[in-house]
Amino acid sequence: MQSMKGTTTGNGLFTEVNACLDTLGLKWDKLAGVTTDGCPNLTGKNVGLLKTMQNKVIEIDPDQKLVFLHCIIHQEVLCKSVLKINHVVDVVTKIVNFIRARALNHRQFVALLEENETEHRELGYHTAFRWLSLGKMLKSVWDLREEIQDFCVKKGNGIPQLSDADWIADLGFADDVTALMNELNVKLQCKGLFVHEMDNFVKAFMRKLQLLSSQMEDNILTHLPTLKEAAPSADHLHRYSSMLEALHGEFSRQFQDFKTVENEMHIMFSPFTCNVESAPSNVQLELIDLQSDTLLAEYFRSVSLLDFYSSLKEENFPHMRRHAQKILVPFGSAYIYEQTFSVMKFNKSKYRSSITDDHLSAVLHISISDIQPDFGALVQAQNRMDFFSLNK
Image 1 (cartoon, rainbow, N blue to C red):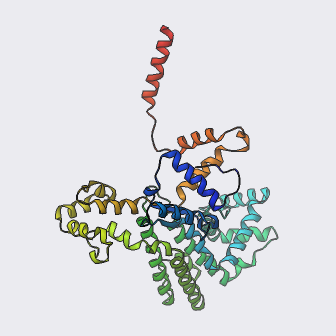
Image 2: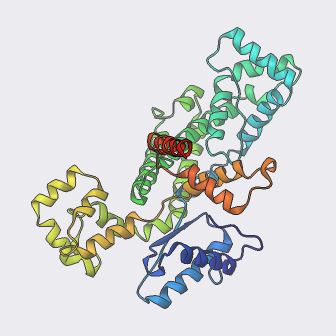
Image 3: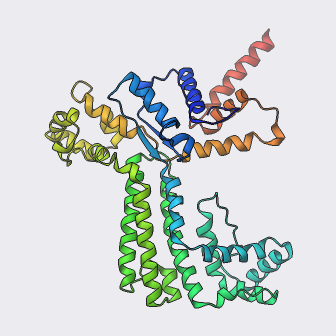
């Protein structure tokens, strides 16, 4: 993480990246790919950071091409905009704010839930920057819609939408769809995922959208329990089916950058079944040797991809090893540095205004490291120091 004091133009970002690589002793010819959140100063065609980095790499090796990816999790969030459920979200947000923003209303509503012995004991806020909060808020409002309506009527602030069958159907649809997207989001946030694994999750989700869309046309709502409970009309189902098709189309559009490396990923995670003729020329002969080795085929099925490619001998499969490194190295999402940024904001607060960049860097190294300290050895070393100090 590099601090920037002035503007954040593409050239300014490149200067900081270049300085950071020099400090770490990293070489430009080792760079395989860059993952961003799609900001214009990063992705600009002429003066963006990615364009400048590609130019730098070409100066060193004209044949070297970088893989530029847009964070998968960020793209998934952007896809939600095509659902057109703002009329549901706005009303639900209004309901939650009416109950939560007033202390008396909040206490009385919680007391009502406890009196009725409902499963839920609280309504959660929705925050645009928290990916999972929307689905959780819609779910809680759906489950508590009768209690909410009774409470709001007693307060003289009835919500007419809660008595509207069409709006209730839209709420059920929104609840089910956001639940599916939240499920995908949680899978994408797992640690240690490679790009091809995250891409597989997205492809599976897109196939689910196609299945649900076709089943809706036949009034099959097996996988949409909330919508099934709402008992929507045929016109509603046709509209919901079109919305799922639009969501599928948006996913296809957003994830175009992953299609550029789809063939290379397939060669890496299915080396024994892929088509040799469609593979890059530098790995074709090695791929034939690999597919002809039955022992390696058995070993491939029993270990992880990382262990398998690490076990290949450098003298026999240099290009296959290099190809696997190129695909396994890139980050599929920006989630890891979003976590780091959250740690930084937590530590660099107004209550710790004297913290310097060096102090912050040290704190971040400790906070995000997976290395577990050997406390026993540290205590023994300190005890020995204390002993020698006493003898002295």
